[in-house]
Length: 133
Image 1 (tube, rainbow, N blue to C red):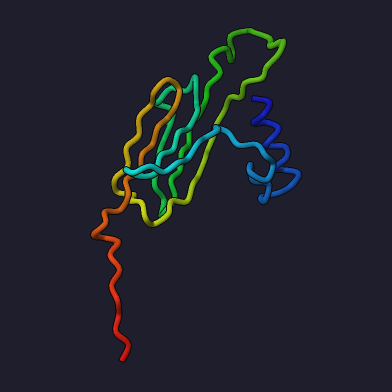
Image 2 (image 1 turned 90 degrees about the horizontal axis):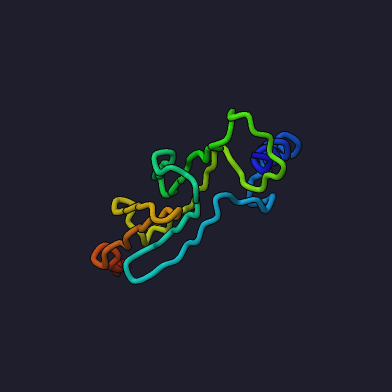
């Protein structure tokens, strides 16, 4: 909660160019790697209900958005120490053309959202030589 409020305040002070990468504040953390089958993204979002997460393709970008809710909000508690963040989150990644955005799978396992984007089949990436006249 405080982390997200901090981002909002910094955004107001620094303007629209105050992206989370510029501030070194990236939530949720993610890993991106490639293997023989395709591109793999693992987004760490423990405590988030899968129903509160959206995965969308916009152009060549993969966008993960959602909300991490505070289960104790409005329950009459007063935090003595709060290190976890709550609120809305969003991560957007540009996907190279060698990956097929029509073949994406996503599953939630032990607080990690695992997204797999298949590679474009070899036939679609053939090089065609053009004769010059």
